[in-house]
Image 1: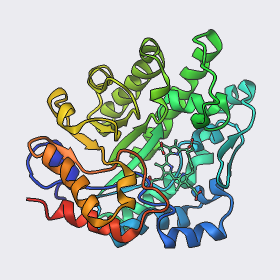
Image 2: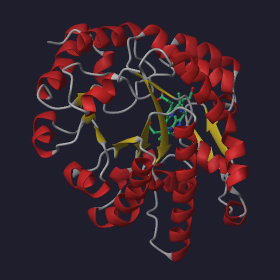
Image 3: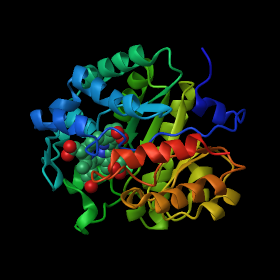
Length: 334
Ligand code: 1CP
């Protein structure tokens, strides 16, 4: 089998720039909305191997993306650990009370059995993509971001977040989460994921002093584990201030940047392959502005190993034609 574009990019033996997007399977696609309308229970939809594999492949039918990302959610892990998870319309996730006794009694087998449809879905995706040299991206939420949802029980985005203490209970929970994330990562790799992305969407909530305990140390345990499994890690510590330090500490293979990062600064600071950056709001603009935005990243990273992506997920209001235009700009560059 030939190398994928992302593999070639990592090994520095191509000038072709790979592209895929966070939330590339999602509400901006009418074919996704039509399935979603008939499947109100989001967790159930993620656990429907036929539909989740179909949704995973929808964006690849439309666009010349170089990777599929599994249609699933980071909150399936708290769910499989016995916490109730509901997605409310226009509100986001709502989690039930965390019961440490339930969590402590969940075995590896039970956890894997709850998430088995996710792994079956990966197998179906792999089968359909096997001759196409595309990567299949599996993923997890970083331990810190999962802790935030599990303890805050809703999105912290409305400034409703109370800081998490570094006490014994939290430490036990953190270690439990890491243990089960390794199981989840391992099963995704065994069933076809060629890359694992770690989403630390709420890394930016922490002060510098707390990063070692909540972010660097737990994340490095996962990147190490991914290395041991001969797979590749991408980390996305959204809104973190010091990406260079993050890369040194976590030893991730690829770093995904948010849209607050200046590409012309970071390219001198970081030696590993860089992914992403473009503000997803740019895709709501007219083509002239889209082109300018895309070229800013392509030009900045001309001499770096770079994977095109956004600085956060595709917004639901995005016109798929704009995505198509962006992919063409990336594919035709140089
Ligand atoms: O139709 C809908 O309302 C569902 C919207 C939706 C989708 C399409 C949610 C709810 N999750 C997903 C899929 C999803 N989530 C993927 C699939 C693959 C792809 O990228 O196409 C992935 C990788 C995620 C990861 C995820 N879920 C993150 C990390 C990335 C990020 O956005 O920061 C987070 C924080 C979640 C939690 C979550 N799930 C869904 C929502 C709306 C949220 C965010 C809630 C919040 O704002 O706190």
